[in-house]
Image 1 (tube, rainbow, N blue to C red):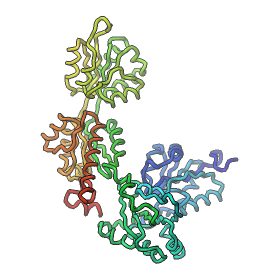
Image 2: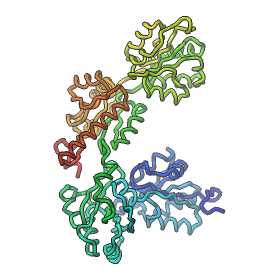
Image 3: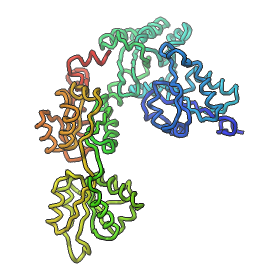
Image 4: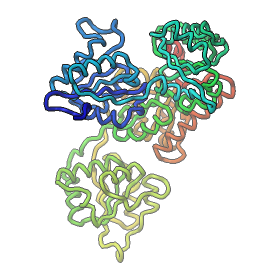
Length: 549
């Protein structure tokens, strides 16, 4: 029998899973599979949010293990007793995932838990993760070896003894030291005492692989002064973990060229995305690729029409051959028709013989996800006007039916309807959904909007401007305002906002690109002037003091 194969006949099984150093994208495919089938999830608090999104909604989380015993409430088992929780769940036939920061093979506590499972015959498997000591330097732009090669030594400063420090200090190996911010200078001193020269290059990285990552370049002898000059020490957060890399061959001197992560154009920017949640998803993914931290705030809620009979008649007419074309002007229109189809037990096959038009790339993608490939998408401007430029006029010889089904919002403009009529088509202009102002966001978010806590806000329509100001207040003047087009920019200016970024075309992805270009230019300007690279929100009074607290 395979000792790591699932055995549900008598007991469950345990998966010891490495969740990596913090970036959710560093989870392995095997880790995601294990999380999706877990009955019980026991995770280090540092990676709980990373792994929980891949677990089932019904997963049991009896204890989020903590390495800080002082922070555990009375009566709750400490980390050394987590093995009891793991084994108790496994004995009950549960599939248990024990998720730890970094790699489980480098965690002494987890090794004890594995031995405890083995001693009781509980089946377990190990899913390796990216160790912080390896992943963080990679994100900091600090390769651990050069072309000539060198030894690499990993040191945990909490458990290193005098012999360890002296051995590494006397060598020319690259040393990767896991320690804390307020102890990094002491670790540097230990290496100097062991024989390393004080001018040996050194990098120190906090919050590695996350958008809070910061890296400082120093030497063993100057690291204390560098951190004090950067005003990160002394700090109430001095106990936060850091990865320090020491060595002549660790390429610390080349970080200006190798720092790929912290040099992203919107690195660490908090960007407000005021759209419906469904619409914000792909835009948020794009912002993350630029290093930003998107914060989605719905400003519009979508509701069914007050009188659904018109929509019901139109969908039935679609099936019975009443229409030559159906034109979708938004993702919400696709969703409304799809929901009505599902209500009647229909699917994409009902579009057979009907020509389908879509305004914009996102609407087209929503149709493809439904199983429908649009026949017409604007070749130029992604708008109703752009669609009309490509729409063929009605021809009684080639078009057996002269009617177009146009499902849309209750507040849509008349541009498309008027243009289609001018081209000779009859239009059934049907209210498929209503847009109403969303509820105000939480007080914390409203305060961040008005107080300058966001670095940028993306406005994708005039209604997002009006609704955001209406439900949350006007963004602070340090916040970068980015608008999708002239009409949206005009509405923003009417509300007293300074428009900093304009999309070159009416596309949410082009808007995000334009903001990234703005951030890159801002960064380049700061570097050329010899100034530190800061976020727009750090310009507001007291922001740096609050950021360090």
